Image (cartoon, rainbow, N blue to C red; front, side, top):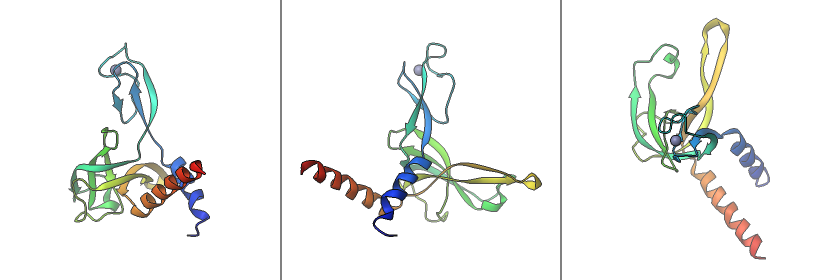
Length: 154
Ligand SMILES: [Zn+2]
């Protein structure tokens, strides 16, 4: 990938991979998936959309070897609880990773993937999943941040 291409892809990536949850402005709790009503405050709660950090680490996981219907294609696959950078925990499939390579504490990032196609109706769902964090993007992002700082100091 050329140097010029990188920022464009990074911006596109940021836009596409937004993970939206809910936050209650009364008790300050964040929820994922989105909720209509705060389970703590009930009717007193005030729910707003909030963008969650797209990165986190594997908090716990299990490898599924006997698939449920519609998941046959993926067997064996990894289901994990991912702890995001703001400590919110979400359950998700881990993709692009062999079941023997996953570990507790593994850095991961959100991505969007096809979930399943529904028989002959051809319905395809997309949803969020997590994959091992791509270190080269982390390095790029850190360098970009450094560049911004030095530009600001000129
Ligand atoms: Zn609340």
